[in-house]
Image (cartoon, rainbow, N blue to C red; front, top):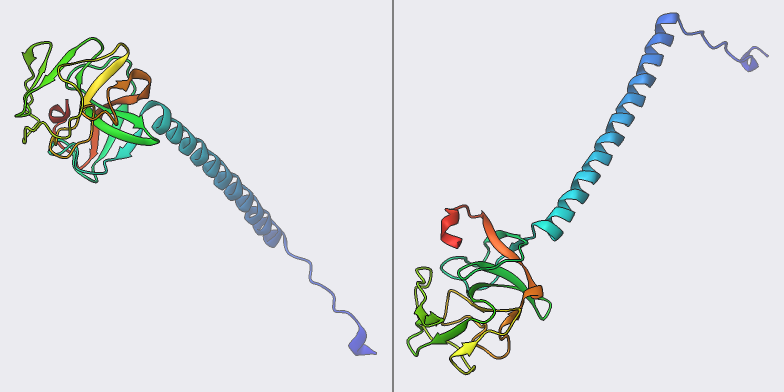
Length: 196
């Protein structure tokens, strides 16, 4: 009979009760802090995604059409701006792809390119220190070419390989196709004056 008698549980001391109470309070504070941190990180991540997609799109360059200014693998940031000038590097949508090219002329400008690749806008030769290999490239449009209203004439800096407004496949691009202009190269770092 003695084997069936349950043992009496010992009553914890006040010190043990206080220690357990502190442990439970610490766990509660820890969970609350962890939850607050996770919520803050989610909000920051959502804001960063919104900023990166709407206001400052970040993208990686693919291809060689903008060499030597931008190379394959460079990471750049675009800034939305409704006003684009000759020489600006812009990103625009073409057949669900984001292309990067340089603005050569805007609405109403008359663009001419000679057989050596020298570009003139409204009769004035364009100073293009960013181009290392002047070439007419793949050009099947009639020159001189007048840029239609609300459109921009764009060309890549690597004139021998770039497919751009010189090709009727792309032509001059509409203003609403333009996502923004390049204002910062994130990687690799270099002097921003080079891309302007």
